[in-house]
Length: 352
Image (cartoon, rainbow, N blue to C red; front, side, top):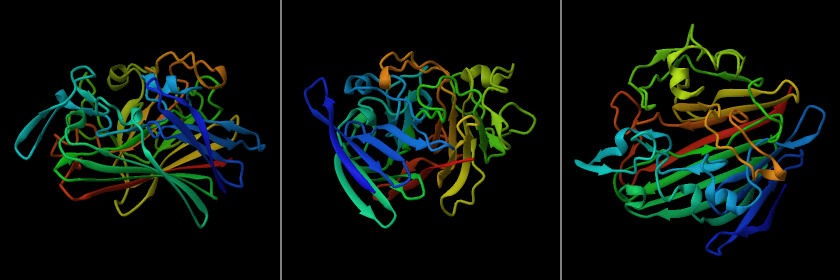
């Protein structure tokens, strides 16, 4: 197992950006940048041993500086939506950026995917890791509290990409961190994912209003197009005349995960029949946002000259539920001062 560091390019302000590649002995590798802690490549073999890059991304730094669809991105301080961009902490109302139909989406400016991080690499038995860390200062994006945070990517000998999110704030604040990689198990430049199959270990999802804020209802998936309790092609029901799918333009919904809450558990799977690749998703977070890239911006500067279009990737964003800081019926994304935010997500790859 090894780590490789290379100069990736320069930001528009002239800062050096380095890529770091973690490789194991099975032909799998993961590449990420110190700019934004973004994941740029995940290379895994198919059933015949042919390796392909299975995440969408850009060829250069300029692409990641723009990156309107958040390809490969580390998302914070709050992933997903906050209603009206408003949150009350300690009796004080904080107004956040309203960047999505009047709501706050994925934190604000600067996005956690558009700042530089300090880097530390280390190796353990059976894994190799890279930690990206920084201090998110008080009132960055409008959130109170100096948040000392890190995201660590580890590659194991079992073909697992392990992501650990850690943060501690000196004031009560809101924290909800996730990864926004777009997966395509046929290869990043292989076109639509609608024939790839998904399974989600969830009996309920969160219906929303027309601005994609949860109503507070926990709706059963049984008998609806939202049901992924057994493997189903992403495209099978995506165009059904069903209100939640109309609202989201496809799948862009949070699933209530059927987990015990006692550790990292299997919560979802993605399967590509053509290549035989399987991706298993494990987490100890309560929710999973399934996003079928309905509004993926037309990308003309993808890796290896690729062009990306809507529904050519799928995101499995583990997280607290949307607007969880404002809804008492949800597990809260409010982090008390001095308390550690520490959650793990694993993307494990194998073949079938």
